[in-house]
Image (cartoon, rainbow, N blue to C red; front, side, top):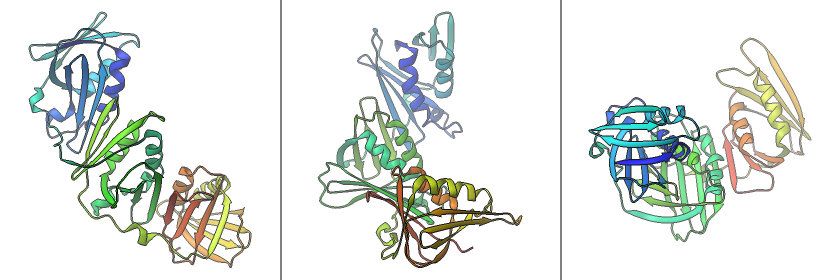
Length: 367
């Protein structure tokens, strides 16, 4: 195996792939990246057995085919340390990989390519293509609500639902729920649902960098696969039953509050400074045309804000975790937002003022 490549051309796919590779591995080969040269193309593969990522780059100079695995982190550090316009020559020499660039020479240990595990291919049951920018927006607007290390393992991921002409993402950690939908040219008569694990979702969002390009998605029985010209990403699915999110969406809230998103966000941020560091609780008091926000903490410190809002219902006092409200306002993009409430014990529904494609549910707190 031998190839020559510009530093920049190698570094981009290498950084993507190295993101999947775990540093602390039980299997030594999992901290390596698989290099394969074939038909004047170099492919780099990294995996942690849950998620697999293959980056591809065309080779302009003559190359010798072959395959081997080398330590991912070391190869990336070597590439980063070379000058931006460096030309890198890589060759396999008696089970060592020799990397030369200018007057620099590095010899890396290897492990055979046969030892490298591949994520098993399952039959794909549903394939479609969507715009990368839109899919990334879908993920970014809902991924913050995924659970982290919850014993209900199916919450440590995101529900991807495909139905006729529609792609939807839903995430919840049991205290809040985020849902975002987009129109997509998908012909699928039945609802098809999969749960993609947290790491898979975050890696996939990182890869969708071409706003105008498309990405092909295959949903199999046990895997999701996403492919563009530059990479192929595969993630195992979470085997579990996601909660029925439609039952969680509050219905029949009679108190509609419309406010300026940025004003509310700033007022919540300031009040949060003096909220209890552990529970992050704040109290909202609604009156006609006015929202009062209050926080206090065990040190007897208090914060109070008043924000003018468009509201003309009865008065209401309700508590929330301020971090959850800030997360929602942080992913919204419209100037105005609407908040629908019913009583102090019912969840709030937050949406962009003139847009129904995303919905956020936050459970109240007892203060």
